[in-house]
Length: 213
Length: 143
Image (cartoon, one colour):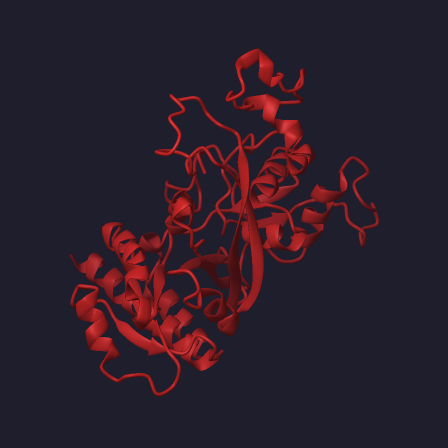
């Protein structure tokens, strides 16, 4: 989105705006947290979001202003050609007033600009990887590393996959020592839950480390 | 802001074949944005995908006041969706089967009309304490 986010300022109250009223059972403000599911095309993002949450397609009608940058020299002239980008989206209700939202990132490179909005304020990200096409997840790993967004790499594999996958993947992706790599079966709810728990624990550790720093 | 376009798209011949239609001219070309009278951005603010919307209107199918007579179907549907529980912008878009951009414009109108409240997401770095993340972990394990 070309428009600037208005939520850069500390929530919940920003001068000049309305007082938020969405509240949990104890009158606390309702909390919404966001997790991204990224990875190459066909790696199982939709499957993972669907295995742990009620999945719904979300349409964004995006102007191609950003997507066309670098392709067309528009000389500062804003194009208003639009395109529909579909992404997967699911909600997990932790309790009344606390929900987790999962967003599957659009696979195509030309929609990188959408990632910035998705990544803004994200608790963390799952990068799904397939050991047969590991290079497909390089861009996602780069993206989250550069923005210091906590992420885990989840290697989507069927049962009986090679056991050394975790170490090999960690080495091949040149991950920071603390970045978790887990094997998962995106079709399996328990497996998907484990991936998310690993991510939130990782994000929590980084969060604590930042507070202590 | 951009309102009802007064003149239609310029014929390509006026500006050359490669000239793109833009600004108000592009509005009527995109059917969905007819719902927003050609506007592609909300007047007031950019709604985060996980901003939570709560309806704050006396109108509704179950209300003694009935449905707000002044509201077109789409904004009325949005109000109804978030009448009892806060709904995220993403959920509203998915439930209405409308693109997020369209929903954002309609939400901007509803906000300006004082019919909704918006709860902006708390950035993870500003979470009150570790308790919340512990709750999330426990909640996920209990799924």
